Length: 187
Image 1 (spheres, rainbow, N blue to C red):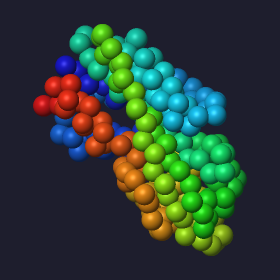
Image 2 (cartoon, rainbow, N blue to C red; image 1 turned 180 degrees about the horizontal axis):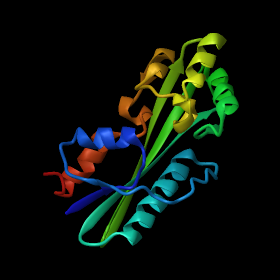
Image 3 (spheres, rainbow, N blue to C red; image 1 turned 180 degrees about the vertical axis):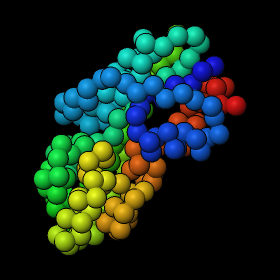
């Protein structure tokens, strides 16, 4: 069975490679609309829309995996910052505080679909403004929910996490593997 990752995220592709599986990347064209009150439903819905959109554009026997990640603090959803100023605002808001990272993952195949979410709680250290400026000027925060990457220089902001580390990278790979394995699709 062909496995397709419906994401342009290099981090998700990197994590999929850790499974030792062959897969193709076909980025979704779905615009991420972060609407709703229930964060877990929000990310699952977007992940499913992404997977369905790519499924409709591809052929042969396949399973398509979509994902969406958000950062939430004070019930405010922080997606990918639109610009440097928004990235700075996100990081200042997260500094010295606790936030949650939600990732929705969806699977679509010829006769079914399945989705789930993962939540990880992250505590940030106090971040000096000069460090925020330096990190944002690198451009790294602009393609990451919440404006930071736990796998890059942003790791120094993290004091501790409760939950799945890879979820903070945007892809809870253990649960992805478990679903594929239980379906007999992991070889």
